[in-house]
Amino acid sequence: MAALARVVPAVITAVVATTIAAPATAAACTPARQLAAADAYIAALGDRTKAGAVPFAPNAVRFENGLQTGFSGEQLRGDLDRHLQYSIMDAPKVTARTVAPGGDADLLHYRFIVPVRIAGQRIVDAPTDEDFRIPRSTCLITRIDARITITAPR
Image: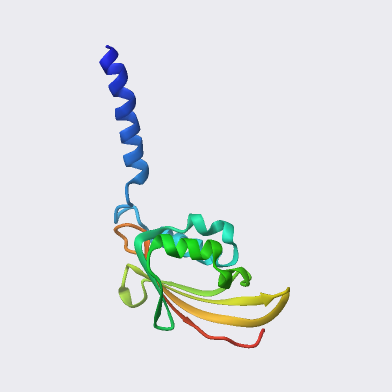
């Protein structure tokens, strides 16, 4: 009985940990969950406190205008939380979201505008088109391709 008393808590802990950490199945990763993953990233662009909620895959990468700027999920999350470039951004205004453009179920396309402020003054806007690769097998962001331009404030 004493052995059973030691084994049962370990088994329960293992089952709970496995359930919590298990990746989403293709059936569980709906377009709504893919949108929620990309929305978490967009929200973190304008609010550093939300960086921890972004569901990056460990091997996630990011490209800005063709140059690789992200090399892992951990680094991307850390950049959102601590990097200077994100500290001057206001909350992005999403103007369009498309799920599965061209029939690719793992791809989402976003168009948004990021107001940029320095010392409280809006200095430029950064209209951005971003493609998120969020596989239906995991619902984790594995790749972001951003095309960023700079315009006068609108």
